[in-house]
Structures are given as structure tokens and as C-alpha cells.
Amino acid sequence: VVAGARSPAARARARWAGADAVVALDTDDVAVLAERFTEAADGPVDLVLDPLFGAPAAAAARALCRGGRLVNLGGAAGGTSPLDSATLRSKSLRVLGYTNNELTARQRAEAITEIARRAAEGHLSVTHETAPLSDATRAWQRQGEGTASGRIVLLP
Figure 1 (cartoon, one colour):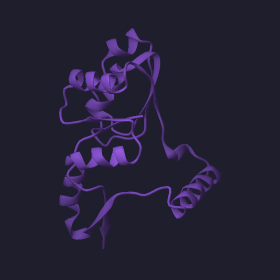
Figure 2: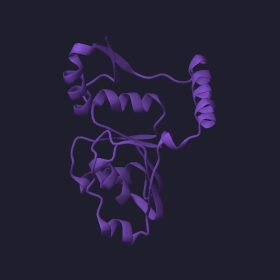
Figure 3: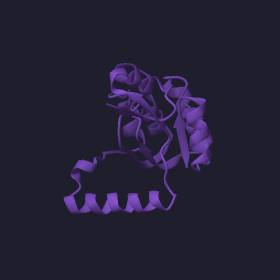
Figure 4: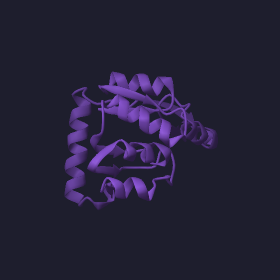
């Protein structure tokens, strides 16, 4: 498991959570990030689960092997990505999107029950901080900059 994170604190959390390697996302240079991902994984990978999009997704796509798959789960690093056609075609890559909105009510209930069970057993945690609702604009900026100490929970 290779993780990517912007801040040193987020990289430390990824290591603590069990990542085998962590890549610093301190640049938007796709070539540099691709080299870091490939090196961290000791070569090309079969699968990328991407909650970031943006430059990190384009770099991760370059780290995929022939026929590899990139599954996008979100856009924390950007709503668009400089993913180039040559990368997709040269390796016959598959790019897929995933959303929980496709789950049935039953599937969603089962997933939430399982997550709650694991959290109650102490197997899951989320690093977070709280901020007043009146500070939502600044909190959102800090989240986007990667300077927040985890997820931000707004309090009314």
C-alpha cells in the first residue's frame, strides 16, 4: 500500500495507519510524482484507489502497469486532472469512477453497520478537529491547502 499526502502530519498518519510507503505530494509536477509513486511501489502497480484526483491521479496513472486500473473515489486534490491520452492508451488503462450514491438502501445500511461495528471495536478512527460554523470559509481553505490536522467538523 502506497499512500500520498501533502503535509508531514498527514504522511505520519498514513504510516501509522499501515501504509507500506508514503509519497510526499509537495508538488503538482506529474512526472516527479509519477517517479515517486513508482519508486515507492518498487515498480508498476495493478490498482490505484484514488480519493485525490488532480495531479496525483495523473501521476498514479503513470505508475500503473499495462492493463492497470485507476478507481477514482473523490477529488480532494482537484476537480480536474491532467491525465493525458498517451498514458491511457500506451498501457490500455482502465479509469473507473465510484460513488456511494450507487448503493441500494440495504447496501448502504449494511456498510454503515459494519463501519460502526469496526469503530466501536477500536479498529477505525478519523483524525479530526472542530471549528465553529462561523469559521467555515477559513476551515474549508485550510482543508484544501492540506494544513488542517485531519477532517474538519463544523460546530453550529
